Length: 200
Length: 200
Image 1 (cartoon, rainbow over the protein chains, first blue to last red):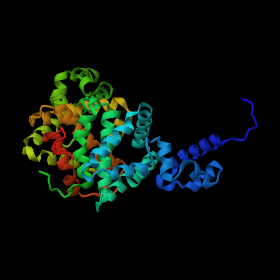
Image 2: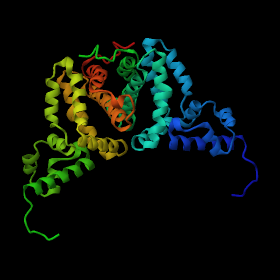
Image 3: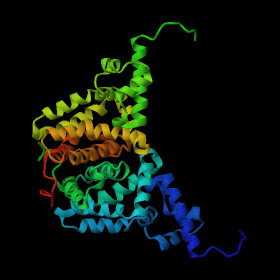
């Protein structure tokens, strides 16, 4: 209760920046939130934000408690053999959701995004523009934005049915079953024909 | 304001049954809600519920304001050429969402299902058990329940990205683009190999 009079140290500054970042991302969306504004809210120099958290992508990754920074994820996915990228995407997605604490956080985020427009804006720009579209673009797809939204539509639906609705038998399906079911879908969305060839 | 003293006529009875049905489906879920309980709440004989609304499936279809009764939908989808059922499913889904008033109703239902466990139970049992699983079963798939949940995962994710998030370019994609993108996915989930054959 008593004020110690100590100035906030490194961890205090770090926490203040994180709190500002959470608020700015929620209020302004991923694109609208600037490092300058986040730094301003925390009362620090923008350079200090970069010093502690790296790029805006990396800061956002920290806010979401991602297992790897978005840039790393993009590199990792894009580094996969082109014909295996669908498998890598669903494996990475399962990995993100597997850790219990992170899963609870992701569930809250997904649930919030589904009813709250600001939360939706926050993850929308990030997931599609910073993660999925770069992956599709590096794979050389001309229509990367459409492909990115197709991938997003399958991943979010999968997460909803498996983790939020807990609808059986998908909720208890093994990683192997999940990967076998979704890898070919994601592979086609990222690199395959979208003009109806292969359909019917 | 003045009471007319008229006994409720057919439309009053019909409305009372519908109101009870909405409440029961929401509280007890699709499986838990019985025609007997719905009739009891409305103070009518169960036979009258059947008289006005047909089967429980059909009553639920009316509550949701579906464009066709679920039984009809199952028949229609199962009657498609086996290799065209994926296309029929996404075409039917687009049709359900196309009509503006119905779209608003579906958006509310979807949004509610995403945060509210009772609403989720209400549509979960219905969509998967009464609609998708029978279609998969009629197509002769041994693992119909898993296939039904895979289809549900793609349809709900598509609806979320296109109609709730309105994420571009998927939000403005033409019916033709949507069908070309999703028909092969749904086709494989319903009739194709799920053991990883065709992947990588």
